Each structure stands twice: as structure tokens, then as C-alpha cells.
Image (cartoon, rainbow, N blue to C red; front, side, top):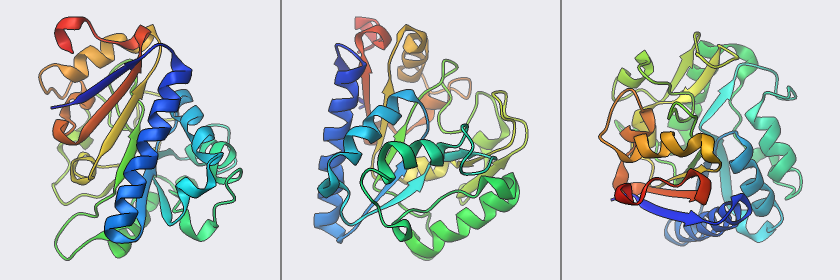
Length: 239
């Protein structure tokens, strides 16, 4: 069952999310010595990263990955890496060796292939998908997650697919790199954040019946935590 938490405002969402991520990372370190955290872009996750970046000990022995990236240079305003760098990586002085960036500037297919190889080399047992400890996700008004959009062919990628290149994203820029739905299913936990009335319908769709028209509804619910503010909260009957 999905764990849904409603907070009064966006500030409270970011605070609750940062605290939950901290606990999940601590548990991963205790069990395996190191934690693997994957980041997404977006305003709501960005403030959560600022809070994490201010607590340096939370990110000790944490390796940082990305759930998706736009095919732009890392210093481009559209880059998810740039958001994470400015909000968390630089303030927390994270060792670059612990940051695994999607190389969007290489293009969707070369970038996805290289990132898939890196994830497999670092995290995969033979014959299995790599397993991330925590994946932080935003959600679009159309209920897309990472760069997995409604009805897209990427939702039907092979079960062993790790990372996918996209040439025709309905949201600009069109070229992107994303973790596969299988990778999100394999993660030990996913945390989805949403704020604002513009996300209310997407959250309701996510909590409804699984559908390719609402990619967020395809997440593995037993491993999913959702934190929203009052404006994005679903009607009581869906909670």
C-alpha cells in the first residue's frame, strides 16, 4: 500500500521529505555500508535537496545518481545535475567521485548506454537489475515520472532495460535520458513529492488503477512513499 503523507504547505513537504530520506539513507548504510540515492529535477525536490545539503552528515557514505536528465550540458539551466549541484552537492561539498552524472550532452542513446553500464558495473548482481536504495521523484501534471511519459514506448521497455534514451519527449527539451520503469520497480524505495493545486489530478491518477496513461500509477506501491501539500492532496475517498 502507498504511504501518503499530507502537509500544510510546500515548506513542510520538503522538511518531511528530507527527514524521511535521511532515515532511509541511514538504514541503507547500516545494512550495506553505503547508500545509493537517485535524484530528479523539479522545484519541490530542489528545496528538499537544499535541506539535505545543509546537513552534511546525512550524505556521508552516500553515492548519488540521477533518475533522469535532459540532453543538455551540465551547466545548462535545464540540467537536473545543475539543480542538484547548486542546491545540495556544492553546499555539502560532496566528493565528485561519489556523484554519478547522466551525460546528457552525449545525446540520448549514447548517454543512456554509458549510464546503464555504469549502474550495472557498480550495483548489479549478475543477471539482475541494479538496485538503488532511494529514488526521489517529482510528478508532472500528466502524471509522468522521471522522463517516462503517458503512453510512451519507454513504458514497455524490456524487463532488463536499465536506462533509456528518448528523442521525442512531449515536454521540452525532446531529447532526454531516463531510468526505466523496471529500475524504479527494483529500487528499495521511491519517494514521490508534489505541491500545488496543479498536481492534484496527477496525484489522484497515481492513486487510481494502474494505467499507462498515468505512469506514476505503475510504480510499485509497497515501496512507494508520497508526500504532498494540502493543495495537491487527493479527495478523502482516495487516501
